[in-house]
Length: 213
Image 1 (cartoon, rainbow, N blue to C red):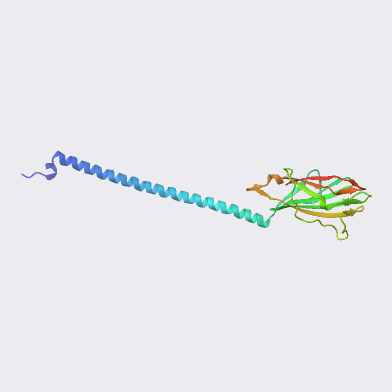
Image 2: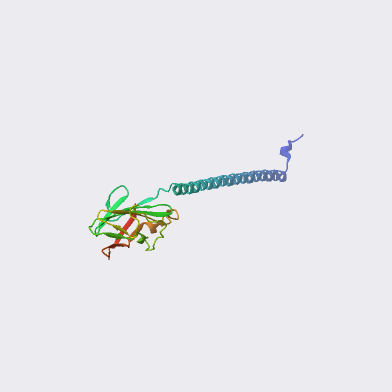
């Protein structure tokens, strides 16, 4: 009488088969875990790459925006505190028989000031246009980098204006419009002085405060 071989195995052989089966399961589980870890690492790497690309794209757009802004240089306008608006960017002050119209703007590398001074009094008005200066919010004087302009009919210095006559003065001051990625807070307020105005030998003080819009 022949017995089935599977039934004839002794307990030691059965235990060995169980151990082998468990070993196969453990190896399969380890392989699956390793494969899962590889997929997770790959996913993380892809996410890191995507984030890096998004950050680089944002940085490039920011730099491009700054370059375009610097290239187009739209700037900002200043308004004059306590002055009357005369046009879209001009403001007028009157004091001591003098009318002054001021246009001020901040560009990427300078501040431009355009003045029109009018003598509103009967006596002659003397103006030394070399004595125009500007001070920033810290109280530091800005370096002038432009020249003065007066009407062609007036070539002497100082300029002497009769009643109703007007002299135009343009000044440009060196300035760094940006501090990092924002506007330079030191240029928020500019104080403008004209120290060379006299009438009958008596000095006439002139001061205007400009604040960006």
